[in-house]
Length: 418
Image 1 (tube, rainbow, N blue to C red):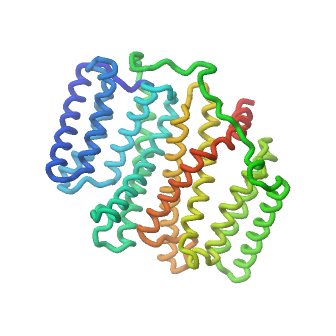
Image 2: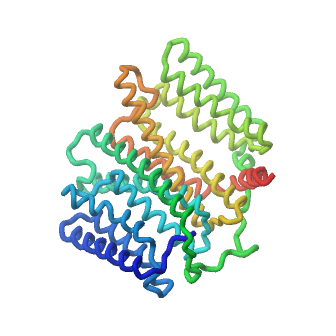
Image 3: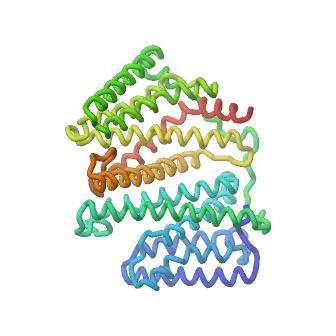
């Protein structure tokens, strides 16, 4: 991946932008704007690490990447306002994420192809938007700060955060386009001094595969029966929604019912056997969500957190399977175990942000049209708690559930190879 450039002119411009970051860190520390301090220090570290490792001060990222990183600082000065997450700062964060992943590529056994680095950069941008607002909310609740909970109404704060999420999504797309053009046109060779030896055959620890269906304490036949029972329940809810003309109930139960048949379609059309427990896992998640829409969300406050955690485990399982399939299928890509953990978490957090944007869009559209929303939001506390439980679900899968997904990943990789 041609990113680092050895050139005096590029080094000089990089030094200028690094000094800008240093000045911002100092100013932020004096004025108590610690978000700016943290951002600047992390950016400085990412910029200078290649030169330190290579022992060559001219090995630096392209100056225009550093310009993108410094844009929120220049934006901040021009508008005389606090550094905030918008399209420009999100673009800066995406650039920082790209450089971080490229450096990890060169300094560890992680191997990434340019196209996949661009995809992960967009995912990283959304995930960091989620993490930033989770940290802000926790700080406000536990320590009385006012990063988010600053006297505005729950809905007003939630709207502002949704705008931040949309800005992060837009910035991820823009950054992806910029990086694609850079990787496509750049003819600068990489510096091999930064590269560690790639993993050789036999050095990678192969993940041991277990059959989840054998660990549940019930037979595969009973697991299939449980899936069919929940499908019948979803069909009844769908019919009830049609009979009573409840559009949100019809949409939620209908979509959920369709999702429960995905494992069977994959098995039939692609020849990838899906064990009954994985189908039960997916069906249980959407079934509990539909039960919540019937009334349990209002009756049991913790039901929303339960369904978000379980849904997040499904997303994490899909994300892990996708990542490991690429790991097995693409010879130019290698994920060490720690990378599988981190990237799975990032995928779930990014998916959670996309889901919250969708909920917000549907909620606001329903208000404008004067109809009941298919998906509704209930203020910033509800949004952040959802994201927190999404993270918990992904951690559970990344730490425990992945041993049950390796067989599916291998079968999918073999399918792609044919």
